[in-house]
Image 1: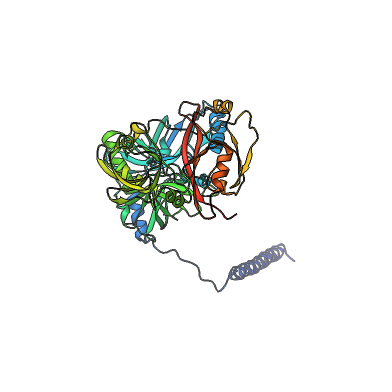
Image 2: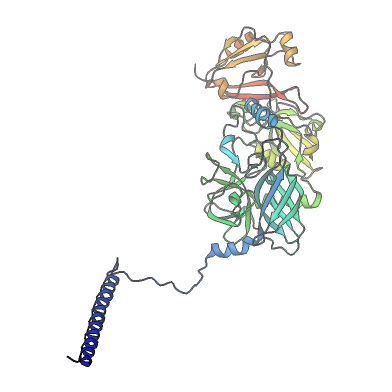
Length: 548
């Protein structure tokens, strides 16, 4: 074979080999592609249709419309303050609250009554504890500042904001944040009212969006209610519910005399305090103030101050910087079985006068302790709140015709309304009953209590300047004495208007009483005075004699 033939044969073999290799590659590639395609076609849900996101089309209802309108009017309020010393906040006040006897109410206080003891007070938690916010304690030393958060609602375009007093009280620095504005603006307090827990603060800004004010008197149970605020610091949070009740009074809340709340199940949490409650028309009908909770958070029961009350407070504060309320200068006690006490004094309804402030309007008009107030300007007075509502709204200097019963005889007194802050200048703090050094030998008497005579040494030790009386040494839990509010350390001075000078006197009068008969104890109880030291105040406890 020639050299030329060898070359041709070698080229042919090389070509053949390349062609074979290429063919094999094509076959393998085809198989791989076919397998991949088959694998791709084997999806997890072969009968499912892919979803398509539609073009954005906003849906709107009444709630979204209201939120858009009101959110620019709702602000976040943050405060800084210096907390009191630990020895004051943790030890002394807590102990005093536990020992506090029930002081008689004046016409500006609606207490729970003897025997009630404010035992629901712990159930009703103000949003921010004592100061008013989610309290973040930065450091342990007592001179370190703490911070709190709350809400408010703009009610005037010139920067006036309505909020809760407990949000701003004792604050050394107040700042306000508006929706869609990260800047914090300094705020000042124009005035506060502790009785209604309302405050007015001001921010130096103009042309703000003021919320529209509604009329809370038009509210009905079942109406829609919308809450906007900053719960836990989450600004512009909107929650929706209904009005669960109107005119709600809080049992055991000593500061609720001027607070008749709107109850709602709109979700309200710490931080909502001071924010608005809104109706379906986008009008502010309340200021969110309190919650009822066993956990401290939302459980479906929130309370808002009616805006009609808020408007009255706001108008007084922007005009004078403070709130003025009428008073006639009496103290009374809301007690259980009040009918029994009234029956002993010849009345079927009314408010039993406990004490009369010296030189006050009632004192000048001739009113006395143990009178029963039955009417004011012809309007029946059936409970203490009726008296409070009429008197507090009466202008200072106006005259009231007060109907009373004294010694079972009706009378009418002309009383000139005075300024409550001047008449009740003294404010009594937490109680601190003084225990006798020598309790002596207590004597068991009826109604589940033991009593003992008061020696001269005991009177001096207790600073008790009254005459007669017997000291209650103990009361049996669940007994009649316990039920009507009698406590260890009280001094019984009268029983059904008869003087009690010894345990024998008490037993003698008790033996004349029959089961079911009305019985009224006049009692002296020691409280803490405004400058320290024991103060003795009189009150009455009444009920029906239990079956023996």
